Image (cartoon, rainbow, N blue to C red; front, side, top):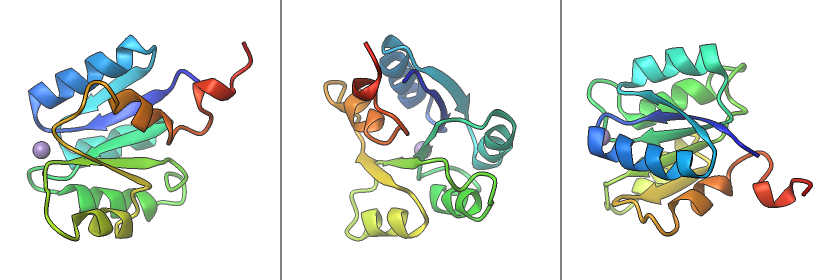
Length: 129
Ligand code: MN
């Protein structure tokens, strides 16, 4: 499926790369630079998936994930955390906060889109030709 993906990421270069790679595959990207703005857009746009940076100013990605999963109208949206934290236990922390998936930065352009698409409700491979 061609998905509507909310990208919550404060770093302009990371936003640019993720947007470029996903748009190349036909997906629509809605960018948000902060957690609170991301939450606002999630309510309004009902994206198919949320890509969530963890290191965000003010409200970090764990807090954003908990807020999304605590909202009955949003909790069915899959969250993929994207983080540069290579700390032991961080993956578990993301999953505990409600993220379905976890991708480490730096983004690998060869595998990024396929990794994201695994978390879409219906993968393009399942679609009728
Ligand atoms: Mn960041």
